[in-house]
Image (tube, rainbow, N blue to C red; front, side, top):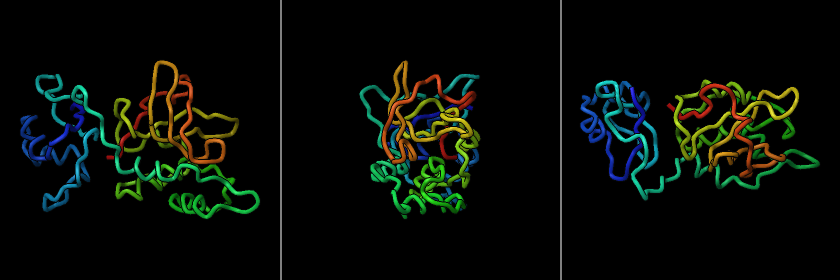
Length: 208
């Protein structure tokens, strides 16, 4: 199995043909992409799919074409619009209460809500969430991918008693990852975290 990064103009059938796969095999490797009538979700450049590997090596691109900027995944577009949502004092911000409700958590906006924010954004964009409010548990969400704009990133606990921190990848360099996340200084914002804080294992995740 290999990862394939969707290029501009790709279609599900075209990707299957390019990889030498029949369409049923392609659908089986990407559950939830198409329904029983072969009606598929809209694909977007930069989205990561799973395909067959030829001769033990990827038969298809695993990186975007040169000069191509990935389109923001739908959940990232939702998250970007939420920037600035912050905890209230006094009272509770009803938007954060809405995030928490998406993972079945009842509590004020001082409740840890980074995982709830990720779940809410993914579900709001029409994709399958995880329904879990513990950030560290998101290490098992969806499928593992290489660092990709908009993928879910799981960090180690940033404070005593925390399960970790989780957000969406906005950028990264050799030192830091920039995450768009909730409950970052009590608000939704883009902020830098040391790559040394990445959770052990396959901490870059993609809905699937």
